[in-house]
Image (cartoon, helix red, strand yellow):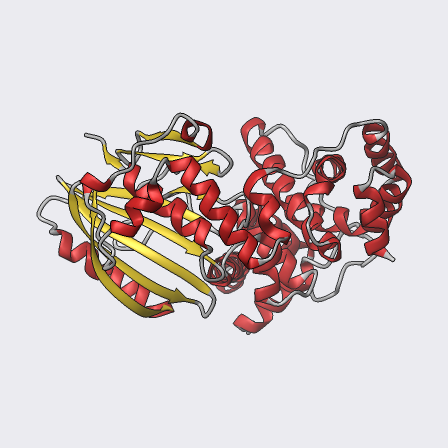
Length: 184
Length: 251
């Protein structure tokens, strides 16, 4: 079904492309938000991705790889948005405390704050690998293929992202425990 | 007491949180923008070869590369099969070649090279990391990405040797790094812009094919790599050889 729609879109059928866009939109936004941590930037990245996808869809050789190809375009747009955001540093960070997935009791408000800060310090390339692996549930070879990097690079980026986030939580815990043992 | 696993689980749970529905206005804005917008044709040239038979691709590769380099294949035939490229065998570029390759000058890494015009160039902006190896997708290298296969790259970088450092020490770091992730497949000698170079073949992470030239010029070490996720095609090999032929150290 999707293959047929992709082939129609490659032939210039806007309705077919609109169907593909609507089917992919939620997933694209979810990925973009988790990489960029800003709803406005994520929406811009998705919108731009869809426009680029329409323009370049004829360059997609294998219609069955539409989703992976779209993910690659999205991540490139996220990198661009992240660079723009860093350059102007004027965007307002949106920190959703509730969403369809809902907050987990395991993750406290303090954790969220620490993780947001630490994640924001990671290079966008590391954030993308972390999201593709832990949010989309892709294996590292799959992540590498979708992002267009060697598996070793994906593994390395995931490692550094994990270590960075872990360090932020550990530092926060150490601060808390130091506060607790200090005499009143 | 919170363990490392707990921290990782917290981070992995946190990343699941957040919106997962796109606003209609975003989709509508995108679809409005594409309405009536032209689509780009698929790239012509080498990219078109992707769907053809291997025999066709090889024949086309010979034709295209011969045109592009004005006799490179003749030079390749006469080339030292051990990998050396004699400076006297540099092909003379035909007028048509200027459309296929264009000069790229790296002030950052002190060299110039001819790159295929259809390959994307991502210039590096950072020095070779101390005591380490510049990752091929890092900002520590100039990267040229094939338009035919996003996994096929030519990567070039260089670094000034530290005071008192000899090139062999830098080479040892490279060897050690490569040995950690790669299978050694062969070594030969080569010449890069008139300077003896070491040429090695590696197979890394059980999927990446790497041809790496290591050379020392003045007080700088240079790396030029061809990397691909499958065996490099004849086109890629010929392009890489052309890039090596055109490589020049810049003082």
